[in-house]
Amino acid sequence: MTLEEELRGLLISELRLTHIKPEQITDDTPLFGNGLALDSLDAVEIVILLGRHYQIDTSELEHSREAFTSVKTLADFVRKKKEKV
Amino acid sequence: MKYGGKYGNAFFHHIIRRFGVTPAYLAVLGLAVPYYSVIRPSVRKSIYPYIERRFPGQNAWMRFVNSSRHLVNFSETLVDQAAAGILGTQRLNFDFPSGELLREVSRRRKGLVVLTAHVGNYFASMVMGQYLDIPMNVVIDTQNYQGNHFFDLTKEKIPFRIIPPTFEGLITATNALRTGEIVALMGDRKDNTRTIEVNFLGSPVEIPATPYHLAYATGADVGVLLSARTGKLHVRMDFEVIRENSEWQNLGKEAAIHRMAQAYADRLERYVNRYPFMWYNFFDFWELTSKGNK
Image 1 (tube, rainbow over the protein chains, first blue to last red):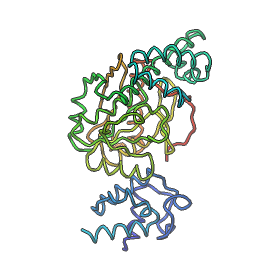
Image 2: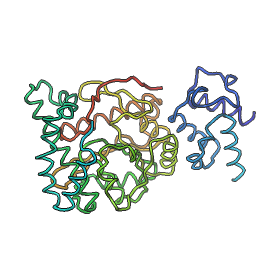
Image 3: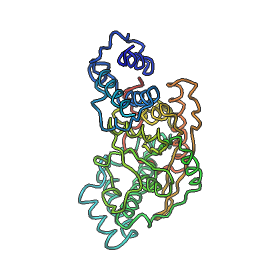
Image 4: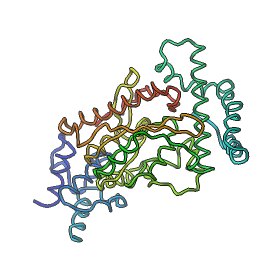
């Protein structure tokens, strides 16, 4: 399973997006706005799930809004943080 | 509700600087209160939705009297806030019987969401950050905060980190809680995010859901910190824990969040019953917009 696939599953389960199937989310589907229409409180949960599942420092996300753009950008952020460990 | 204005505020700030606090009280009582009570009654009437629920069944005269008393208290509080900014926060006298409880809970380093409200001298309560061992963050929009009579005037080092109520700010608050810090938020004024419906003074109201989502997501403890103006430059503060040790987490997210929000509304209701003329939300707090939960 790729990191992107894993993140799709996590977003659906942790954010309770029960009306969405994983295959409906592409790597580039916008998480906010016209895409999944998530909001800032969902972003809070994304921060928590990234910290919990990947044990990474999420403080950088305070200045990296672009990391929340899509599954791909989230995966890139996780990879970058994992490389640094 | 617009109260004061640039030149009006500058006038009262000049009186505080030149003559002291007591003349400023007299000036607001002689000028500002009659102006906003009689000449521009829309300001006084903006308190009615609250006054009518806090004192049900009152006649028109008593509604006028009570709303005017509200304006008197609000005006004196603004003088105190400005005086703390101009003359220094050391001029404020604090009575904080539950201060040790706040220190004790914050020292657990589990993250602490502190809910405040527009009650009494609420800006003064933020100054309490200097007495805590744990870093304190306050989510507040200092740029657009009407009646910002403290931040504009103080030259002191603010004893907390200000977090703007933005997307990035919310991430900052989340990380602060994850590292065991304190995050204080106003719980009684809707923002642009989700709201949650609770009962307050006998009717449903919507309050911001953000504090409870933050607490639920991070497992932080939750407390309520309210303040009352008890005299000239005197502030009484009360802190109470409403959730600790991830209580209610097993109820599921929505139920836990609602339980926390109602607990906050109950504490606020108890406070405005005790200090009826010190809740400063000058709009119809009971108007439901149904932004709703997600």
